[in-house]
Amino acid sequence: MLRRIKNNFIVSRLRLWKFLKKRFPGVHYSKFILNYKENIHFSGYCYIGPGALWSAKGGISIGDNVIFGPQTILWSSNHDYNSQLSIPYGGPDILKAVKIESNVWIGMRTIVLPGVTIGEGAVVAAGSVVTKDVPRLAIVGGNPARIIKFRDGKEYDAMKSKNKYYLNIKYGKQ
Image (cartoon, rainbow, N blue to C red; front, side, top):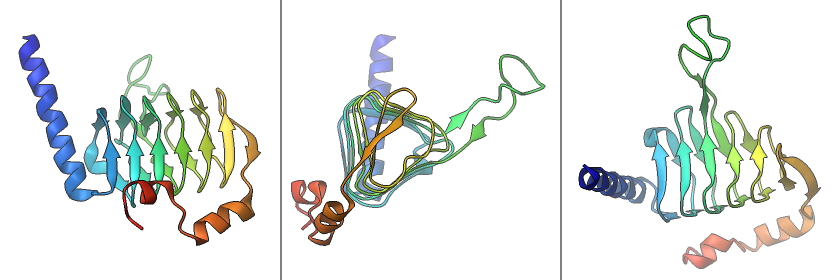
């Protein structure tokens, strides 16, 4: 029985790899789990650290040059705890898309909950739980994630105008 489970896991990883490489050639990743892969969209280069667990049931959209640390969790659906069908929850899931804009860095073991948008150039500290939208160039951290400070907008825009994108340099897009 263990051998069958292991082989099914390997087959599903192989299918995920083929799916991502065919549809999104700029996506680089280590071992991770992605549910509802048909509901995910990548706009450009992306790195996904090992051990990530993503559920795109409600949709996930990821911009260009986005880096995810190890063991990140993106979740785009939730149960309906106000359901009249059963307790503790019931009925259809509540679907809310997650949107990660370009040039975002999400640290290790961060959890991004349904309906959240993380703005361009934002940085999310390791171990954060993101429950609300993150503004452009914000640096957030904690549980729930709160704004710590903002990146220097002039410096950010200067780097952007010179095409100084980490993943583009690392993977040879320039």
